[in-house]
Image: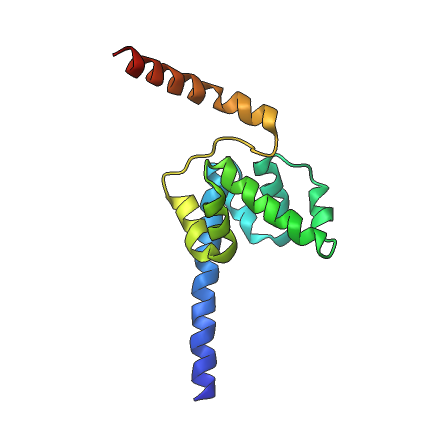
Length: 142
């Protein structure tokens, strides 16, 4: 009976890992990066840092005990913000990644630019802000 429980637990864990990897693959592709990069441990973190607009040496900061945990959470938050999501979505990515990474990858969210690089993020989203201002102006005139 114990072996059966281990097999079932292994299958469930494998399914959860596949869901996270599939979502990460699509997130990378939406951000204009190679999807397969999510399969290679350290390289996937470097690609994640590129997506959020942070330098490669953040990877070194993530290796420091305690501080690394904080930096990893910041990376996840910047990833959510790069796709136009809020703090609640960040918490979902942290605590339920097998649900929220596929939502981010396969859902309607679009890559809005590297949130960690404010200048690049603002330039990329400037057109969206102008369109929103035009819509608001048209509604106030009517």
